[in-house]
Image (cartoon, rainbow, N blue to C red; front, side):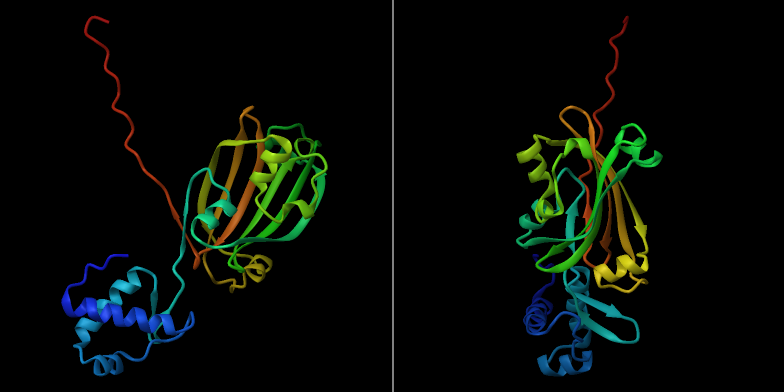
Length: 246
């Protein structure tokens, strides 16, 4: 990211970046007084450079404790893109670990979401999604079983959407999602390797194929310390006015 800092502060920013590269994630920076003396810089100038790196989420301040290195959050676009493709585009290696896999009859709420009769068989599976082997998301997916005959847990180590397209001819064309803050339960926190006090982001939604069928319902818990969601906003087109005398 381009720095807006002038002169000496930009130089100190470069020194801070070099220092961060030598430290593991979660390591504490040396005290402000020590860095000021080491680099012969005013503490106000040093603080300004640190402030910018905090904004960029390369550093995090903990009140009464100090300043620590952190991993930048993955900025996930709220759009029609699966986890695997999204992670690859960011230069990381996606991965999955199957946590639960079962077939059952659709209860009322599930049947309504998938627009199928109550009692129809559905496939439900929960996966831990990884980026460079780091746990990122606990994702639960429910599909009408009749849409994906023969699918097994071993088939779901990679991209679900790529599998649906290549094997079943199901193509994702649209969907709706709801994003809200959530706190993880004990089991989800254990899967994500976070404390139950770590705020997360919950994303729930349905997806439609070219036949306008709801082919999946998903609910995901995203680590709040690893993920940030980004949406593209557009102004609506101006209303059309009727010509006089219409």
